Length: 160
Image (cartoon, rainbow, N blue to C red; front, side):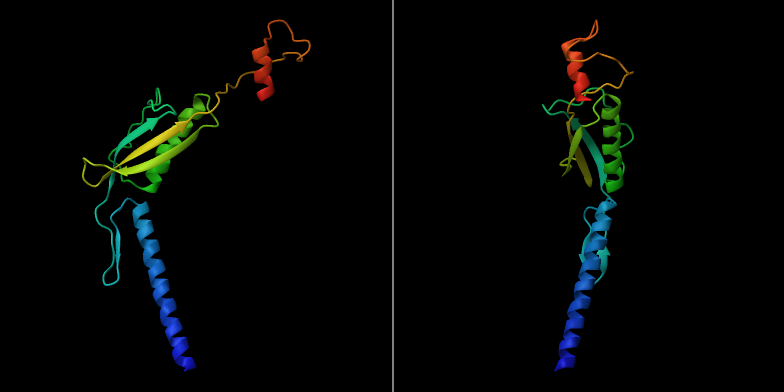
């Protein structure tokens, strides 16, 4: 009796291990752009067609397109995790170079309703406060500001 229990437990463990490995293979295939990958117990993993990135929309908080941001070379590439991260890195670098170091980006991927085997990427940007890196400036102190220092400049100095 004890031997049968061990054997059944081993079979259940092997089945669970096979299931986990097939799931991880499917996740890896989807991350590489094969969004229709299916794990089949008889034939293994069927990747299906390679999905491509069709359209990229970058919107600010109010729903307007991000002004001045142009992405070239990302449409038509595989819809893989690596390419999604590259797009987000490019947008983050653009925001950093334009004075928004604390911007947050939320992404959403949708199946394209027009193109076959394609997805659309929507990035929603919350730019946060703008900052400008400049040279060192001495504004005195809040009680005795030097000539030309304004209350706004003192407030910005306190933020940093």
